[in-house]
Length: 574
Image (cartoon, rainbow, N blue to C red; front, side, top):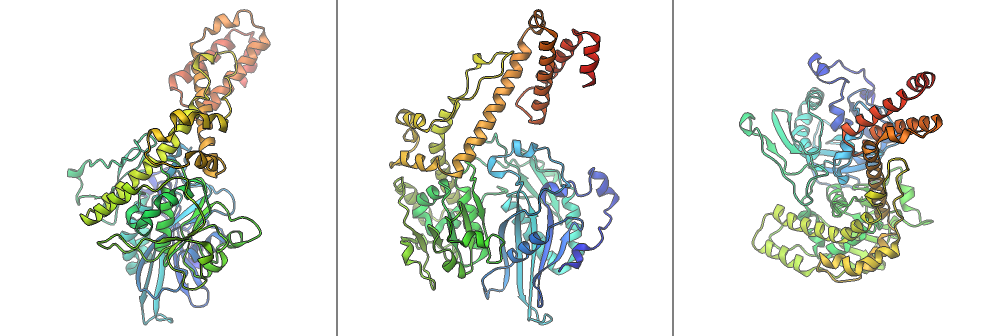
């Protein structure tokens, strides 16, 4: 299927090799590989090229990428199309060119984590008439495969490189990959200049410590950069206003469905609309992480097709985007189906889709609408719609409308999550209960009923004007994967904080006084426990100062030196 991808790896320039310790280490901090998918008369979609040549995709992954890189439904539209997909990795863990000890994920916002079990595919598809081809058409896709959800950055990169590649082919691609292999790695909090094909793309990588709702792009070194850089205001944020324009009056309902991890199908006329709508939906919980699965674009050839269309079990917690009309029949048992048309920006509020009963879903000619029997817990926010309408009348730019919408969703999510944050913080043991020579006390269990009692005085009504059944919404949320993901993350962070506080308590204790009346067995036991704590602190990157860890190391040496020589030898040997 792809003889070229099995070609011999080519030597890279000496300068490029010297710049990083491993071949392709810098490249793979951003991308896994670049694929070219073409249409073969005998094979259908076929993988023409995978670069770097030594990057190994499994046959299953290659097949999936081939199908996901072409529009599924026959659209007679000629020209260029851009869209995205997300694909489950198959075939276990790989050895990566990029050595990352998890530092990026510790510092990046939860919504921008490097994926460990999925790939993102960013596609630039070209379909133009070409009489030299047997079918009379040139059909080819250039695909960037990455573990990072940087949809804006990678789609902007494709706009620069794909048209050039379609003209000049492989040497151009090789040159671009070598340029990317010179880029600095994505470090949260940093503004980076990324040169490619004579253009410098300037981006800021968001950090976990950023204040939610701000996306600062600091302009720096502008005067030294010629030509002036192409500044991307965000590496990942979509134009929410454009994506949500046909459903603006139902934004409340969609936010609730996503928050509760409900199964949602987005039926769209093209992969572009499908992938943008799915990614907009999953981003509307920020800064809360959407913990369910999602597929911005999904085809009938996908390996999970049977899993999603079976009627023998409930649909999975997933937002899935489709374009093939065949899905109307196979997914009509799903509880929430959002049917949208082409997204057009006009001077008026676009026609808003209606909420319809699922029984109205027709196999042929289904009209746009939200097909569901879901009743929202919260009332609609009419002021938001009025503000957006006013913006349309005043011809406010789309990015300003998007910022309004994003701010509204952020405040809604924060109003919902702050009471949970306050309650879980109250489960942490008091600092004075942490003593050096005992294991740290346990975090108290999360009791839903106790949490509900706190809402009367410290509920979302303090920060949100929306009325409705907030208690009912929390009860449903507790059953969702999003609650489970949030709770696990918080519990892990609190456990690490406890460990860190315990280490600090040990550092402040008088170890010599403690040892006076202790037996050798107890002292050896302390050495082993302290060593174990030190290893764990370093492996898990606990929030502890380096000087604290060094002091614990000195303590261990002090304790060992107080023991008989034979025991010292054994412990030093270990």
